[in-house]
Image (spheres, rainbow, N blue to C red):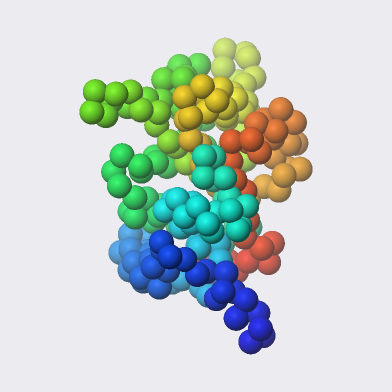
Length: 220
């Protein structure tokens, strides 16, 4: 057990990230914005460190942990392990122009029912914002990827998130539009849900950071 703790502590060393201070900030923010009972669990330290390495662009540690700083993040793990909370809280540690928007995939499908195919464009090819006179791609974190259902719109069945992800992949290639997501699904379940093409595109535009299958349910 001692050797495991030592190897874990060695894995979270950085000349760029003040890890203890980051953990302290995340715990305080979690209590303020999610739940007074929120806490950071020691077994999640490495996951959090990898996310910080990505968002702080820590190149030496990114190389060490196999993280491509030019891609987005796909945070995976079982229900209740804290994926959404972490992606929500990490936004507070970023400069305003670097902050991504978080959107529930279920809410997007409900938007599609109301507004139709323009919603796909809204979250992909039209997802730009004006910053200092320049059009900048909007980064989104799509929360709970896989819980939404295929939608019938005027008789046509559409996998809304599959279409959005494919369009955002095109924009990732042409305009470096970053996409993040959280999901409870495994790689094979993603393929079953969205097809091989979407799974392949997601692999190309996202780093997979995964909680253990046995990760604690923090809601209990």
